[in-house]
Amino acid sequence: MKVGVVTRRLVDRPWPQGLWSLRVAQGLFERGHDVTMITSRHALHDASTGEVDVISTELSGERRALDGARLRAWTNSARKALAALAPDVSISFDRLVPASVYAPEQGGTIESLAPLKRPPWISLAHRYLPMGREELDTRSRRLIDVVAACGDEDRAELETLAPHARAQAIGWGSDLTPPAPGDHAAHRRRARDLLGVDDARVAWLLFLSPRAWDEGELIFEALRLRKGRSESDTLLLLGPSPLDARWRAQRFGIEDRVVAMGRSREWDSALLAADIALAPGGPPRARARTMIADALRCGVPVVADRRYPGAELLAPGRERPMGAGLLIERATADDWRRAMDDAASPARLESLRGAALLTGATLGIQDTINRLHELIEELAVSRPSTRRAS
Image: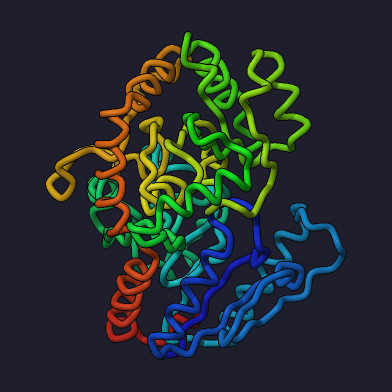
């Protein structure tokens, strides 16, 4: 089957979502589909596309950040390229380019759905809505077939907000391959040696966008408040520049307990070295979609704000009798301190690790690709190709 995949960015970004859309495209190719990706020319830097064909649209200038005029140029060129390709099924990972399966990388969260009067689009891959509501014209909406969410919690909400549309949970799709259970301890020691983390310390992992420093400082304050325990803490901080991270840590007097990794690509090493991951709230764009799923894949429990994508994975359920982490209802430093104290107690931590391993085993990207493969097979049968290509 001929499948067109649209994504604006194919760069190897040093945070969890990385080349997620490319991994999906490659997985569909391996399942027998003829896959072509449409992307902007600059986005091909550092990307290894393998057997997936790539159409690069022309964008003038060398700036990586796209201004409004260039965004419109990208939108027009991508839409034209997709129409010319005339695939049996199209998938878009860009919020400005509609497709039969619409899965934008950035935008507002599901919380923004309620005030919308027109059919809502929800992310298949990233639990996001498009921010540019002016882009949701009637012609574009006709191209959308699926209202899909990563998890069951979002799907249930979507079924009430959009009863006219098909709602489907696709899965979180972690692209990390965890070590075998018997090898985990050895990998953990190597990762800690690489990062200079003493084996006796409790290593907390925090991925933080520069847009979310308010939430980051809540974590800094919670570490400071861990009286009698803070000396045994190490915070592995991914995202902010090391200089900025050290300056802010000094304000809280915890600079000796923060390992500032910057935009390191060693995400998997950081997870292997960590005992517990932290997922505070923050603006929608500051949240890493696969962070919780990636952590659980590596057997790392998570303390998370309930608003964080994937937080539902941490609560006990029918398929998860034990919770794989703790949820924060109110975002205060003292709430975080209490939850961190609870999670770090030896008996509790051992229980959470076991639950994380069980939950993480169901969150691999291959499961998500299989569900997506089944979905596009159904769409190819149910929808005329002339309408898909329009």
